Amino acid sequence: MLYILDTGNLEDIRHCNAFYPLAGVTTNPSIIAREKTDFWKLVSGIREIIGEEKMLHVQTVQTTAEKMVEEAQLLKEKIGGMLYIKVPIGEEGLKATMELKKLGIGVTMTAIFTSAQALIAAKAGADFVAPYVNRLDNIIGDGSRVVAEIVHVLEAYQLDCKVLAASFKNAQQVHDCAMAGCQSVTVSADILKAIITHPMTDAAVAGFQRDWNETYGGQTILEL
Ligand code: E4P
Image 1 (cartoon, rainbow, N blue to C red):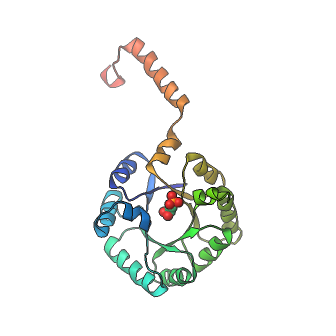
Image 2: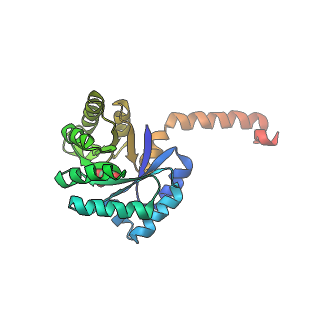
Image 3: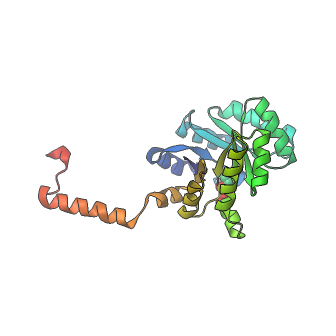
């Protein structure tokens, strides 16, 4: 499982990159716009924090294949490192994906809502397909079932494409996707925290501390 952070907030990226086994960062035009700052400064700030080896997914804002490819090449040149261009599924997006693959540029096909869309995206050469789990759940579309179907169809046709499940609102949705065999998820800092939090864990840790302190008067092993 690859855990990716779905944000453009540099503080969250700095924090999560230090505390979690993060594989990278995903953004989209809405996420970037939320930061209300210079685009190039923001994406190079993200790259600086995560380094060249971790994935950065940046979405094209173009609407024709030709311009998507041109924009992707500029992003590749200016951001560098392990970069994936997010391209929305559609005719122009598929054409751009096939061309970007010829140029050796990584592609994440995004705004995926069905396994049929995911299958054709993978056939076009997408490295990742990003189904929107919570947006499906919101319309009673069973996001994790769609993710399970995509995992199945990509395996059945032996396609070299990973599922990057996206659009989560809670930890249960993420876990359901993990149980469906999804290879990567992109989540907020709050969801990462929710994944590792459990009241029984807090109680266990408090108990260890209380018992230790009663005997060793608050000294740690380093101090004994
Ligand atoms: C991935 O980056 C997707 O664009 C993102 O997870 C969508 O999330 P939302 O449905 O919360 O906007």
